[in-house]
Length: 172
Length: 194
Image (cartoon, rainbow over all chains, first blue to last red; front, side, top):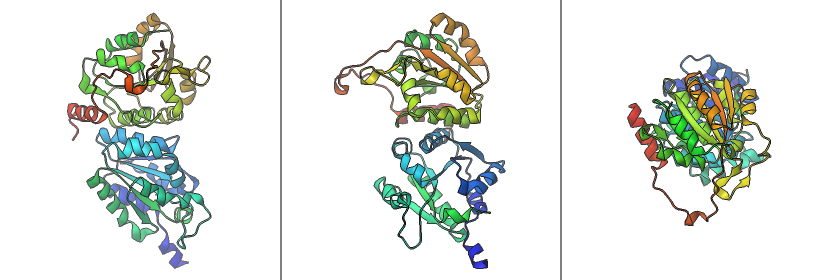
């Protein structure tokens, strides 16, 4: 039991990483697995949560915020990322601004095989778009979020953090 | 029905220092009317997403009035954005939709249910603080001062004449305009954003 708790990626870790990197806005579509993270983000007075109606909007809203000098992060699930291809192309990759995208890796398993095609196509999708990505599974991986953030800043392009095991990590 | 050019002429009288975004075939008239190009921005690049980008800009620049001239075809491609905008209630945001009833740039094919759809009613239902519908220039002119002075998000649907382009893309006359990147750079410089 203790070992299982240690393996959890706590929502607080994500909040700490966002704060450390000066994030100002989270553009997101909430889902049931990230509800506690959503509540926690809403409690931060330094962070503005921007809910959108479809994931493709999130890269566009982030572009507008970037132009305004803010530091947005996109927080969506891999299914929504797959839907957002044209927006990722036109509003993120072509725009020349840094963007950290935190993407819930639905269907991911450590053993590799998964019956969930959302996971099957996630990494091939990112490779096709030539977007670098980091896998984050538990608290010990927290610094990878900063690494991804710094990479997006230096490359001025989107970099993705894939949150593995999202079905367990954010449950209370 | 109103000529799109006339809409921009009326708007220009009340623009003041607003940041302005235009798109669609109707939007091309703005470049002949604007008197402050450094505060004009183009955020196209993905179908139906420029409104979301301008919404983000308005959220990030709360002390600036941000005015977006949308087209109904673009809005329909991402209609959920009106709920996203209404949800954040940006007081500084004015959202025009120049509705010519068709995809003018591809030959004038009608948008879905073009004869009956009511965009202002949709925006009101989504939660914009104030919405308008115009198909008469005089009515629009009378209301423009109010539109530009009240708290947003404001939604203004305007029926405009279609200016259909039928020539193949490669044969159309192109007027040199600033690229998206140039408009972004110019605006950031104007606002002192590094």
